Length: 233
Ligand SMILES: [Fe+2]
Image 1 (cartoon, rainbow, N blue to C red):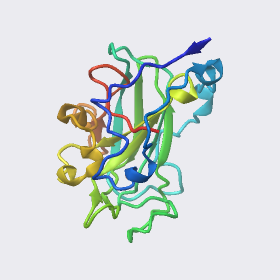
Image 2 (cartoon, protein in one colour):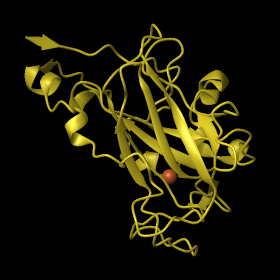
Image 3 (cartoon, rainbow, N blue to C red):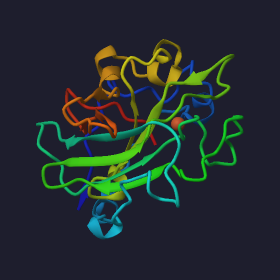
């Protein structure tokens, strides 16, 4: 048995080679892609379940002895398919810079402080109604040397696993009204303005917790006309 996942809508997703995003020139294929049918090996495993997620993995503010510095926030939403049906029990992983705009990574030499109480990675599985929720701190903008005075808008990286490894999808969530949007080649590599807006979370006052944390809502649509733009692997 062989199956082929439906091709993406390339009007929504960013092109693999985008002139303004310098490093894509090195990693984008120069020849047309060869579509290889997937077999049961790729389509059935590994399957992730609740066992892979430990209690507390969804709270990035409680992974160390103290609380991280910065603005505590709640990020939640739903994972939906093309017909707006919830996608249950899918693994959602996030990674992000700390409140100062610094990652714990050898390649990140941005002269901003690391936070001993913040690693910047979390995971959870969607519930039966497709919802997920993280507690974290709002990430800072950071410089990235793509062009003179290049700064990434504040963002949280998202990875979603479907029912098998080959269905993994990766995207970035942004915050409303970021002044860096017009200058960011990664954000602007998504060609359609409406599609770009689907990467921007919305401020959620109803789920903001008084005296504790602002809330942002980020729904992720995996396919169809309203799909969230995804990065190519
Ligand atoms: Fe990033």
